[in-house]
Image (cartoon, rainbow, N blue to C red; front, side, top):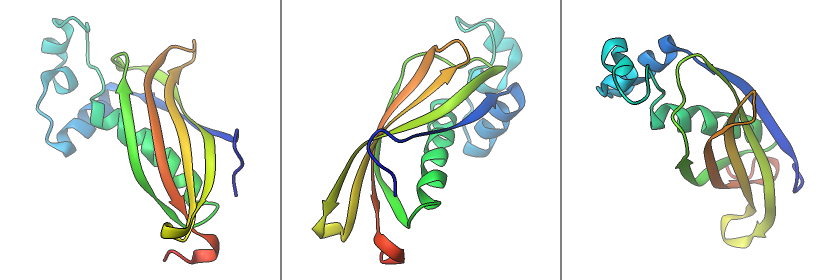
Length: 141
């Protein structure tokens, strides 16, 4: 199991193609995510990732990494969108374990984490505070 201070991350590039595809699949008609001409004329100067896209890929890294250790599920994720992520941005989807407490009611450990999406220069686009529960030896299934 993880310890407080443990960090894990995954690289991810927000391309115009995956931004458009995510918006399409999610039913998000905002032209900033789908229409190059309208997005280029906006304050952002081009296609940007949607909030649901940013949060989904960040949550997926948390879920995949936690699932590799023990069974568990996410309980809550609180996001702060700091800057728009333009198409073509290479990022790191990163998490740090900030707390682990036994929780009798959940019959497992309550794990708190801080997440972030940062680019190669260290610019922070999204932060997240999360709580998950993990169960010992497949007990939660």
